[in-house]
Amino acid sequence: MTFPSDPSDIGAPASLKHTPSRHRRRLALLGLTATALGMAVLHGAAPAVAQADEQAGEKEAGIPVTDKLVIDKCGACHTNDGKGNLSRISWMRTTPEGWAQAIHRMVKLNGLVITAEDAKKVIRSLSASHGLAPDEAKPVMYLTEKRVLDETNIPNETVRAACASCHAFAQPLSWRRSANEWKLLQEFHIALYSQAEVQYRRGVDEHGIPQGYGAPAAKGPTPGEVALEYMRKVAPLHSAEWASWSARMRPAALAGKWLVSADLPGKGRYAGSMVIAPKGDDFTTTITLKSLKDGTTITRTGSGIVYSGYSWRGKSKGAGDMAAPDAPAHEARETMWFAPDQKSAAGRWYWGAYEEFGFDVKLTKASAEPTIASVTPDAVKTGTMGAQLHIIGDKLPTKFALSDITLGKGVVARKIVSASDDEIVLSVDVAADATVGAHDVAIGGAVLEKALPIYKKVDYIKVTPETSLARLGGSEKHPKGYLQFEAIGYDKGADGKAGTADDVAIGPIDATFSMGEFPSVYYDDDVNFVGKLSTAGFFTPNIDGPNPQRKWNRNNYGEVWVTATAKAEKGADGKPLTAKAFMVVTVPAYKRWDQPEVNQ
Image (cartoon, rainbow, N blue to C red; front, side, top):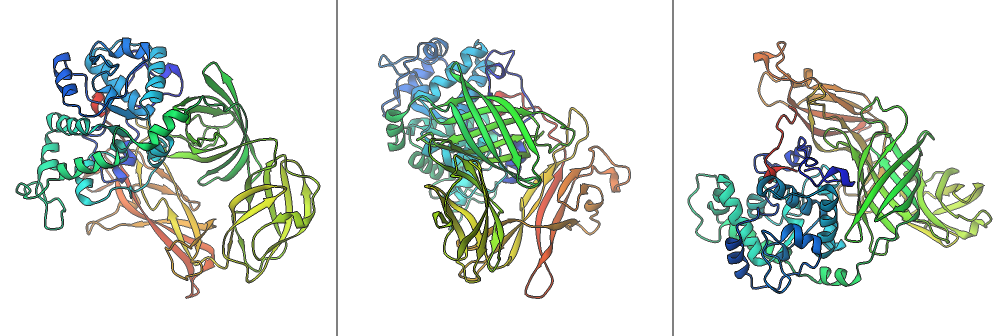
């Protein structure tokens, strides 16, 4: 289910319209199947007797439900134990998306009748009383931000097989449950999905790695038992983080001006402001962004909701030409994590049929003191003289001495080119022996940490995304899923080794992009049919459907390499630096996921 950013998007059955699960693309990249997506959502409400039995099995203290509306809407099925606990609900905590999924399922499977406005209130209430602490939610924000990545938070292959064969591992990690509820969740999987029993109980080898589906029963702990022990340990109902946040949680005091630093792949970096104004319990926004690449300005307006005191869900839209699928004025969903001190935030504003486009965003609250939000250029090479450095912020000093500026060892400000309260332009010299790494930028009491990368040379490049999935399409019903590739340059850092912690990310570099065949069979010709890749790295998929020009009338799907060739940077062999990425171009997400238990 796509989570709402305003009351009209959720609640009453008429509002709970199923949409194609755009998140399939992300999950496919994680080696997941679509069949059982969303398993780790809240169980369907059981009959009162069964719920009482499950509640009787609880050995942990529940979290009472005190909101009258939640009790009224949920109490008919979720029994009260006389201590303020509602069965099942009091032994779970999750994100706003998790509670939205739960309400969606209750409407579709159990006949819950609830208005859009009441659904919004219930989600807000449960997110506050049975939500996640900021430190618990931050590691799994990528799920709600619709990011394409490979999950590195799975402890071993056994847990991967049990918990991440059918959905992202962030799905269960977005929940906190009692030990009994984690056990009930596994039993729910087994009852509902035939493959779950095999996944949980199949054999493992001497290294604990699950074997094929025909393997004999495990002699030691089964994958299900290993996963159950792990989830009980890392995602318990009660935690120090939640205890602390429950005591500290306060209303979101976000009204005012926020400085925005944003990056849109293929378009470059933006800087600007976001003015947040209260509207009842929610907020309205006015956003102004200026491209640091070409100076164009975008104005966006929108609205937002804050859950649990820190979790922003909103939407905004710009004005102007939106013919191009990656036009930065498109209407976007906003998912942001606000720091507990409510002085900064980070997240993603995304759009597209498969949420493939989006700004990576950082916010800094403007105050009475000077604030630095962005620094450009992306990086400066050692030995550069007279580089123009733009410091962008709010209430910056307009009268200052060059000695007031600190740029790190080996970087010296030589001249003030211009100075206003929102931008200072300096001419700087970078010594040949300047320290390689990300330097702090400080002026007038304002500091932006690691804002100015200094490098000696571009040692290697990477293509991002390194592993990706695009969708064929061409109709309103089945739109295309595009991709934007970039070549990111890196300095190996002090240790001279690529891929280590001291490598310096230089940012996007000028490169020419091309596609090449990823040979799977001897007659492979995918590169001729999957679509077109511009020299700037923008991939436009072909139309879907049988193609009479292909052998056996195959669709235009396929697997290809995407290669970036640097225009200026060269390796030790004197040849241009190159890098590859792997792209799968597949069919549209034809399936409409109308089963509530697998709907996102």
